[in-house]
Length: 168
Image (cartoon, rainbow, N blue to C red):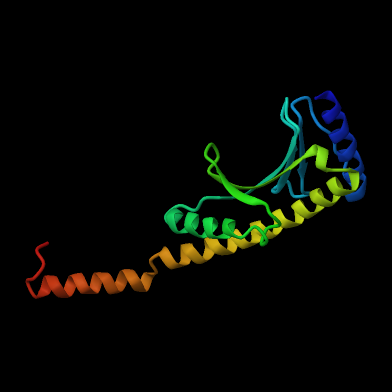
């Protein structure tokens, strides 16, 4: 497995030169690339005793109050792999983050393919984040009560109370 680590480390170095970052595996087989603002991160991992390279990125937290609708939409997005270049969404239960992930056997890669996959994964994760933030906003808007909704509901209760049909 040392050979795989050395190979991936070399691929990371070459890809890093391409994107202008110094990339390498740490002792745990991880390489974490962070955007300038520190808000977005992309991880490349080669677990011990594995021949498979994992690319993953936390995309967003699960929204409170409309999680069922949110998960339903995320599952729909997972159905067609073309939309996110065969990457799939999953849930990190520890952080309650939706994570985009993609895997490839290291043997199927060369330095050019690896660099292309990493660059495409970063673009895909950024697009996925924009899409899910938009989805969250839409769902939150649909499930949130507006001041007019509250006033209408209170008006109905007052009317029923005044007619003696509602005991307060």
